[in-house]
Amino acid sequence: MLYSKTVDKYYVGESHNVEERILKHNEHAYKGSFSKIANDWELCLKLALDTSSDAIYLEKFIKRMKSKVFIEKIISNPDILLDILLKKKK
Image (cartoon, rainbow, N blue to C red; front, side, top):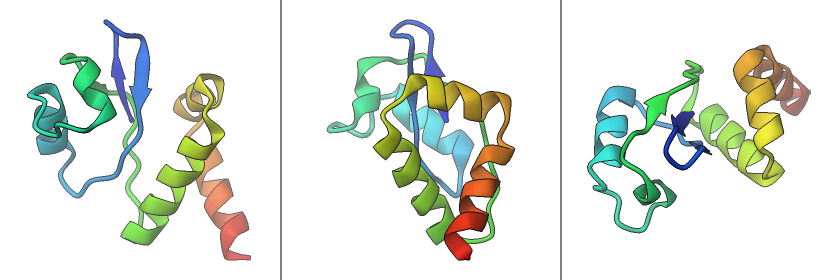
């Protein structure tokens, strides 16, 4: 998860190389991306997962919530995401 102070917004995504991804977002390398609204994106949460399918599942789950409050709860307690994955696998 990335955060921009200038627009007071979060960006949720998955990547194998987080540092490179942040740099590309700040350089507006992704022309159609939501992240083009700012160039001060900073990492606010990084969660290493076993599979990319788990990462994509959580990314879509968070985006479906459409809630800044939910994102801020996750940032303060990332274990929420692990609980969501556990429930998915049952």
